[in-house]
Image 1 (cartoon, rainbow, N blue to C red):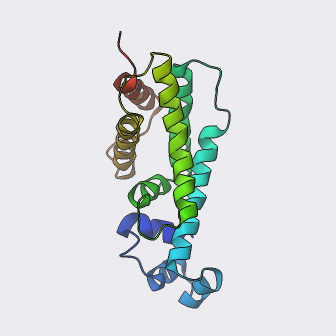
Image 2 (image 1 turned 90 degrees about the horizontal axis):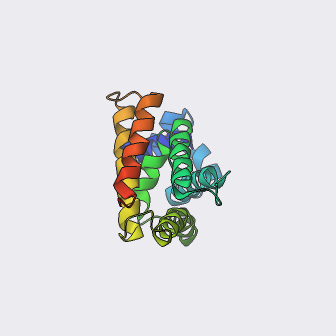
Image 3 (image 1 turned 90 degrees about the vertical axis):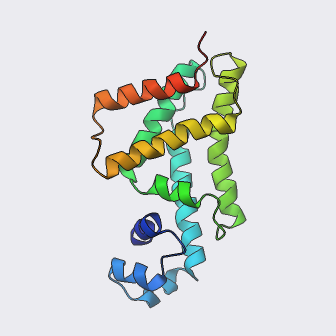
Amino acid sequence: MSSALELFAERGYDATTIPMIASKAGVGAGTIYRYFENKEVLGNKIFQGYVDIFTATIKNGFPHEDSIRNQFHHIFKSMVHFTVKQDQALYFIKIHSGAHFLHEESHISFQGLLNIFKNFFDSGKERKEIKELPSSALIAIIYGAFLELQRLVRIGELVPEAKLLEDVEESFWDAVRLHI
């Protein structure tokens, strides 16, 4: 599965074949078919698995009763933690979240992840601490910027040192918070 994730993230789902995955994994294609009926089943298993891990990472210890700023800090730290553990998974999720091969269960899993962000932003708007933009726009601001940051780390242009992450988090917060 890790070989498939790597290839799907690098090449995309459509440009990756089962023989490529098998070669990268050092097994025969038949071995993969023993566990997965086809590439679509494999792609959905990987997508759902990592979306569920990402969702659990954010939900774990979420400070529901804390300030919106502290909740944002938790979300940011959770995103960093997830990408440190699964460096290609977030990119894979991003480029394949609307993919043709995803089953209904995968879409439901992804919607559950998005709902965490939507609920956070909706709560922040209710408390007059988050800008009155559509939650989907706010998600795009944070998620899109974070994906680019992750890309820069992956290619070695940035080193994710504590001070950089602290400053990036503050910049992200400034992008979505209501300035009064």
